[in-house]
Amino acid sequence: MPQLSLSTNVPVDAVAAADILRDCSRALARIIGKPKSYVMVSINGSVPTSFAGGEEPAAYGEIMSIGGLGPGVNGKLSAALAEILEAKLSISGSRFYVKFDDVQGYNVGFNGSTF
Image 1 (cartoon, rainbow, N blue to C red):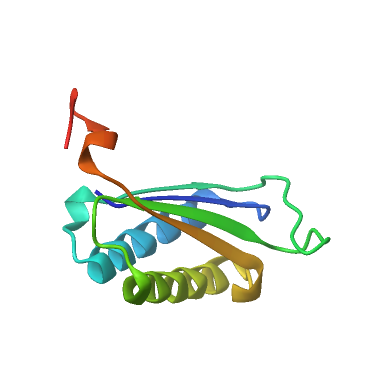
Image 2 (cartoon, rainbow, N blue to C red):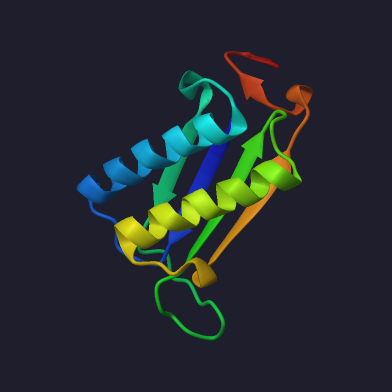
């Protein structure tokens, strides 16, 4: 159940949001190796953000997954997400941080229970 939360100081219209959600969902499923039906992605635009002392376009992401994360996978995910943000929102990869969190199933609730 990979979950990606993105926030950016760039305004995100509905069309861009739909493209980003679709592309990020595909990337997470493909790279982590989990079905797309397990993937959740959200994006928040126009979030006041300072990066390196400036307010140029920037983004922050957090990925949580029950398994599937690790040194090799995380680098691929970081590169794929940076590419999507550059293409869709003109955010340089040098202005994007992403945090990875490989969690235990008992720490994730779903459908009235845990995994």
